[in-house]
Length: 619
Image 1 (tube, rainbow, N blue to C red):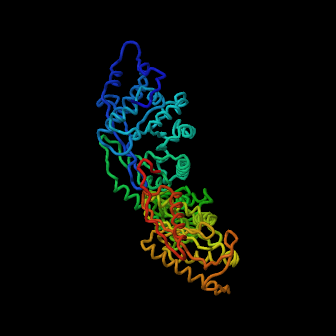
Image 2 (image 1 turned 30 degrees about the horizontal axis):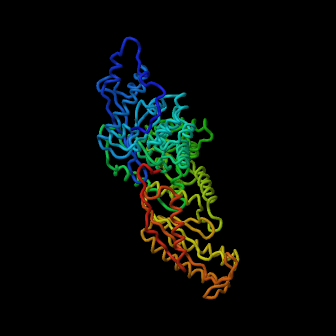
Image 3 (image 1 turned 90 degrees about the vertical axis):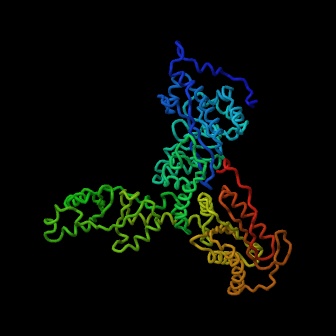
């Protein structure tokens, strides 16, 4: 028996009435013709888990209604839209169950069709149960075919169906009528962004910012973001880096009557390889992962270019028309082959008879045939090294920027230096002022990126024992020296190419290890800090007895303290176990608390792992 027991507010049969004269052949085709279901997978980008499949419908074979757009357009024209949508849902759910597909099934319903389903015209719970599915495996994608009145009454219907276990997705966010207000009112479990935001996102700062903002809102709303329309590996890499949880599109798999059930290992390997290639330590890694902000595309200037056959005289005229132009790229059928510099061309023409001899000759005779050419995704710090090391190419010269080998424009060294300065200043804003180590914002970004990359790592929370009474007795200046000493000791024992060190504040530090010998490194940190502290106190003339010192505790009672020692709480993080940086920070803090329960320097490793979440809960 359905939990939707309220009486229907309208007669669904009234929606199916046709014009006088009976049902024409098209109407019969709509109501009786065979419908086929096809399915497109929705893939999680964390560990490659399968979220489920979107069920799509195809009209009767060999008919003019085979294409879904024409099918539903014809149905709406005959006032049969709701009935055909409900037919499609039955076909999709039953076929999904018959195929034994894993995960959730995403069903498309317009607001009007959903309202009538909630009011009894289509018992979705009974449909799931009779097909052998639990209701919580049904996800209703609310489409945008209706513009007005149906949306007003939708919240109550959604609440009633949700109480039965059915979940909801807002389809094509950002397109047509789907907007943030409807997200706010309906609170769907899934947000599917329109394909217009995915197309070419790797080259578009605005698209990236929009999708990044959607992901930020989704975290607060507790929703899972699915990016639709993924058609290339570059798009997949970019959206994964922005924090999008799931993806759907032709690059993953086209809709099929019998879709794949595999884990798409080759695709996920390609994704991981591309992202690991940029998984370096230090500032360069942060810049390289910051969308196009830290890449050569940020420097792109659109300037006139010439063909190799254009005359040198015509190039000189081009320079006269554009006094701000210092370099003209030479491009042959979309591929850059050289550059012409204003100063070089003027210098040549200033020599006797050069202009008369070569003015009408093709410019390829004077062009520099080996310019610096960089891909638009080149990190800025890498580009700066190339410019400094390029033989015959100085920092004063421009360079060519390409996309997939095709000419896009030029970049100027002056713009590069300014961009690097801005990025480094931004990084410095988030650094701890005492140790100059990355602070909370870079720490959070690094953890989030490791999670998005699906990489195993170890998070380690470092903290000093009895630091407060030491600071009270010996003064804040000596306390600052101790913190700087700790920062140096931790820095010495990490691999900057693999590991990351950040300073939360006070005597709390965070280490993110990808080094396989991380435990040995931690043990070395414990010993080196204790030895270094004794040496430092001797050097600054602070005589401390081997047994420690006397100080007041937090309750004002006099007690004996030993010198500060280092406690390390470590948590190995396997892909798919933790879903957010907040969960990891909490786990590391708990491990640190366990380490501090032991007297003296201690490394505590948390071996217990939380329960792996179900695929549909991944975010």
